[in-house]
Length: 270
Ligand SMILES: [Zn+2]
Image (cartoon, rainbow, N blue to C red; front, side):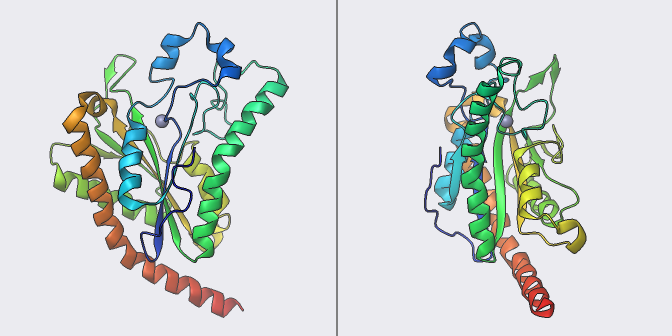
């Protein structure tokens, strides 16, 4: 579900893209039979990311940018995994006949295509795409309480992702010192994900040329913040939007020099 079909361009050099792979735990009617006895699983953190869609909507309203959200549970296909990852299909869908799995693949393609198109649109404008993939995580996993409130996941090999994530972490801590902000926790930014897929698609030659047109950061919020609900959750969302805006405005300067370097490179190449 694409929330904003024609985004306004927020920045001069960089544009924000928002996505929310685990927004919903709905099951489309044609697949409901499969989940007849899986209601508890669907309602659990394994079915979806509660609160993630609200976080993304707040950011979307703030930046007026492209935003898209998954319409079905990750137990159908996990939109945050690549099709060649063992976690792409769940325990419920892994054993399905090929024709059904191909149908589910179609759901995946329909989800990623508009995002790829938006990444391309931004690159064709000679702008930098900064993608925030919005997630929430369960506060307790296998009996262990996680000591993280917000996790920013990125690829340590990509300078702009590193810069943005570090600055965003600092900005979040400055605004709310009690917030436990962690980099590449509770997961690693380089593990199989939608952002890791897009890195490879957007900048296939980056290793050789150190050329980047895309940066992907997963923002993982502890569901304990979501559960507090009401004004607390609302204040958190606003604070996150404010912090991103502050860092983004600073990044505009940074992007300026990158755009200049890129155009110098293209001049010397012709
Ligand atoms: Zn998620």
